Image (cartoon, rainbow, N blue to C red; front, side, top):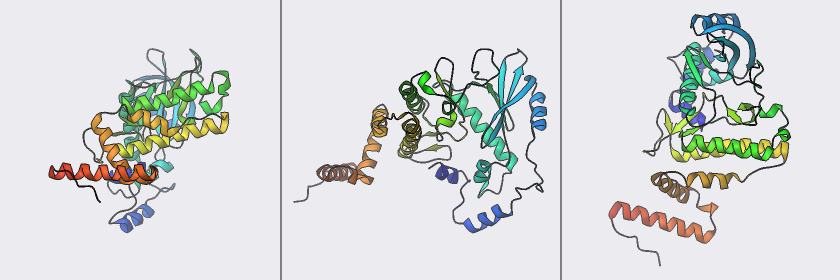
Length: 318
């Protein structure tokens, strides 16, 4: 679904001019001969110092599929981290497919911009690192330390034994973060897993890596360039829940009912969104109900459509 959203943004590979797009993608130079070179650590350090927000750069503390993370100190001697989005990662390459008007450098800057503003919005609703500055393809944010004053980052839940805390409590807290993000922030994380959940010394969770996160529409039932439709959002939310659920099931032999969680979350949505979801469920997934319920559900949906369009009731078939 995220790929569908990217396609509407112009990142998709398929469309009316798929052949031309594919040829252009193949012609892009993602090699050492490219006119745009991959950003190096020394260049990233120079960029950071040029912002005027950084006093000292200490070390490289992490890296993932799309960025490198540096530990630094600001002018008040507080630790911060700088996430530097690289130009030629697999994520950037996928987003570049089908585009003609943007370079790898620009796409990395766009990913950084999405990360920064998503963090700004999410910070008011769920535990995420507080963003401080956006500078091109670099986002400066709070450093989440393992211990107070430590230069070691808080561990990911996949890197420690959670039995020291309480795996079941951690599982429920991770689901609660998704629920609050969805209900209060109107966001879907889109890449929620054990790889982007940190645990503090006190056992609290903090999520990160939100450049791919999207919001859903609350007033209209359509997909737009920046928001997705509510039923598509529910599908992505279920995927996020199932991803983290599978990790705890595999490692700690505990799990929750994903559908039960989804049902509880959707009951908290505004009435207009609940009505739309009910109609879509009866229209598309009648086979998931018992045979009698499926028949009744379809009849109710048809009657509702007739009444909405004509103002009269639909006669039941004999």
